[in-house]
Length: 295
Ligand code: MN
Image (cartoon, rainbow, N blue to C red; front, side):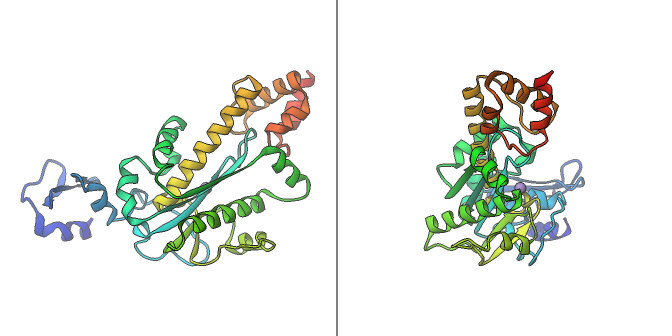
C-alpha cells in the first residue's frame, strides 16, 4: 500500500473520500485506496493499471507453493502458457486438462470478461466466461475418456502419471499452435513434485521442459492458468451433461454419498458394465454402489 501510495502521489487529487487513504487521477483513471486495503482502479484502462500491481490473489495474500525454481518477478504480467486440470475427484466423467496461452495484450480483455480464479465461481458462470474466451485464446483441452482411464489404471498407471501425460500433451499442442511465438514462461498448476512429473514423462517422445514452473493455486498467479482452469471445467461440464443425457438421469459431481445412490441406480437399470463406461472404476464409489444395488 505504501508503494502504491508513493507511486500515485504526483497524481493526488488532494481530496480523500471517507475511509480512504488517498485518491489520485491519472490519464482518465481514478485510483482510490482504502484503509481496508482495497484499491479501486476506475476507468477504461483500470484493469490494465491494476495488473501492474499483481493479481487480486497476490493482493489477498493467497499462499501458493512452488517446487523447483521460484517464479520470476512480475510474473502475472508476463506472456505465459498455463495449464490446469479438473475432474480428478469426480466419480462420473473424465479427467480434463487444458493448456492456454495468454499474452500481456490480452490480459485487460480477459479480466474484463471475468477471467479469474474459478474456484470462487459456480459452473454456469464458468461456462458463460468459457464461451467468450474459447474463440480468443490459443488453447488445447484434452479429456481422457472413462473407458481409456479405467484401462490405464488396470494396467497399473496412477492418476498422477495420467495428469502429467495430459498436461505435457496439451502444453506441446499449444506451443505448436502459437509457434514461432514462444511464451516467456510455462506455469503448471502443481499436482506433483517437478522430478516426479518428469519421471512420469520419461517415455514420451516430446517433453516440454524449457521455462517450466510449477506452483500450487496457480489460477491466482497468472490469467493463463485461470483461463485454462475455466476452459477445462467447461469441457468437463459439457461431457458430464452428455453422460446425463445418455443415461437419462441427473448426476452429481464429486464422489459423495449421493453419487453412490446414483451409481446404484445405473447398475440396477443398465448393469455394472455401463457404470464402468462413465466412471472412474477404481474409486470406492463402485463397491458402495454395488452393495447399495444388492439391497
Ligand atoms: Mn489444479
